Length: 65
Image 1 (cartoon, one colour):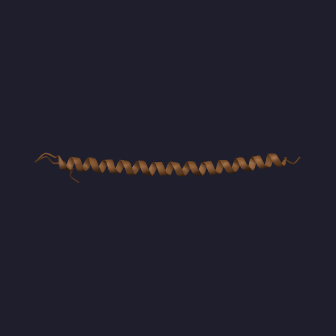
Image 2 (cartoon, rainbow, N blue to C red):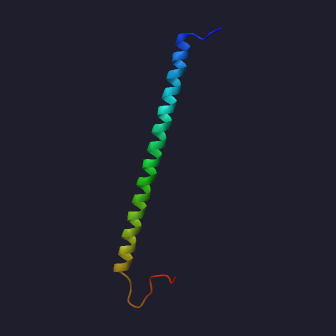
Image 3 (cartoon, rainbow, N blue to C red):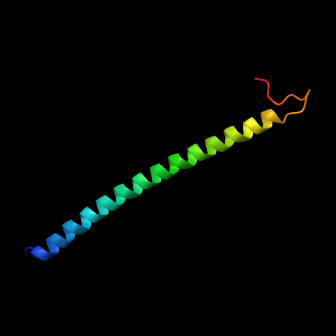
């Protein structure tokens, strides 16, 4: 027996919503992840600059390579 038109349309619409919602979720995650990385990088730069300005004379602050 063939499914009704309403059933097929509901299934198609549900799949379309699922695909669009999944894509939006991935885009939101990637955007938030990149923003968080940029924020952390900027904070680390600020901390490094602060430490560089306030280092004590004669104290080695850089690690030898």
